[in-house]
Figure 1 (cartoon, rainbow, N blue to C red):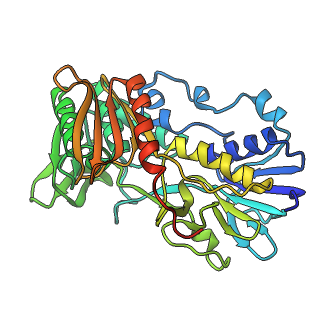
Figure 2 (figure 1 turned 90 degrees about the horizontal axis):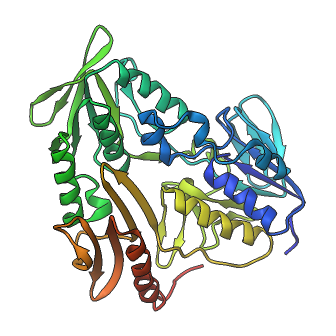
Length: 394
């Protein structure tokens, strides 16, 4: 395989930037372009719902690299100009401003956008959180409000609820799952997290759905649940998941199904790869799409290596972390609701422990609570168990 003379990365966030850096570290000296929809230089998203929202960090601190480091990358950044179309056959991207960008190799790193509740666009005080702009707008509203309702009990919803509570707001969390982060942590650990949120004063209305938001004078005033209860709210944050940014790829010839569908090498078509939240790739015997910072970096390294001539499948051990109140939680692998859970380090009573999740005797995940070092060591059990799996497909 010949090394491409030019690489265009569509998406200038963590996954796109990490791909560019991995290419340069791998010795690539060709033309490198990063096209970003936002006007900002690449910044980190995990701090948005925590340190930036809480006002502990100035927004500039979330920037992923200094201006000097970005200059050393010797790449062209085209920012504030979203991609609106791709011709996969000619590897040509058209942007909203009318630019036409061509490259021998294209990497798709356009991420996801927040899923919204229907019929809420005209109500002030209703927020999603994905971008730096989203965070700053929410920060202003929270400073002027007393009551927040968070619709969504996943990672983002739980983090926003915890941050807002530390700022002194009355916070209620709503969602269909029985506990915060139930699908990400499993029943036992998510139940403990629910206890922590309740101890800090967050009202939990879990196992419920939202039927409507109510308003007064064009501003949100409440959240109506499927139980008939209406929760008063000065501000509402909707954190009910993300939708892969693939609309602009309609008609491109790529396979789109809950992301850009790729083979095990993260290749969507000849000369085209996908990376980060938008990529859905062949992972052993199924397709997998992950939305977290660690995946963006690890996947970028494999994609860059394959662009430079390697033939490496991407077979990660999924990993993410979250900090909420005094709980620092790390997850390696994929917890499952049907797993057998064993405490292998520490104990629950002290709230310092590592829980191993096993299915049919095979470890599938370890979840650590305030024991990062021990959790990282236990990750090897997942690696060893995965080594025996036989991948299907390419």
